[in-house]
Length: 117
Length: 113
Image (tube, rainbow over all chains, first blue to last red; front, side):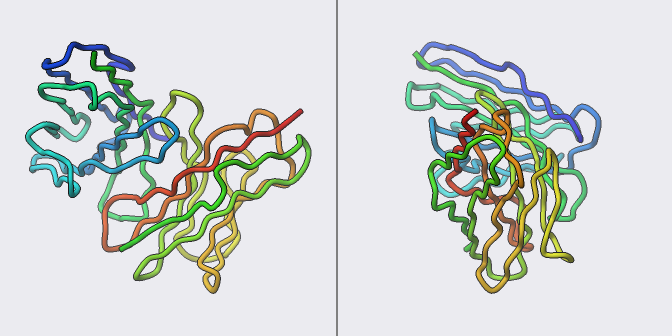
């Protein structure tokens, strides 16, 4: 199947700093990328959906000014957690899908574990 | 709104025995249904999907799932469990009108040797 990578795989930062997480589709062009957040022993919660070259669509309750998403190319999307606080500590997972058909499966990255001290 | 329910937090099964992980869904139209598996500190791996056609869908690693429209269920099954199948399993649904998947709460499968 298609491969999605994330970098970094884990990051520890101080409260108040910003952290950028990259998501890349390695062998396909991702017209749509999704960012999820997963708390320990819980399911994935969709944060936002982004299409290449346009603004991301955020889910209700997700602060767009805090979680900046950029989908600059068909193979790269970034999530920046601005002014991070301990409550932002979580496992962030991106996924990518090619094409417009909603029945195409999404391919998931390995996740990034963010710890804010 | 679309939703998915996985009624079991954990399923325990002995190696070699058949396994079933349950999933029920609710969508406004015809559902697109998916199963994913997650190993510790890893992203999700796609197992199988149902879009249309035969109600029994075969996927990766010997898994299969049965779509039952009348019961709005999409249970994951495997005839003979392996210890290496131990992981967290997520059922997901996509309403054709939405782009993103909605995930169930996950079921932890524990296969004992």
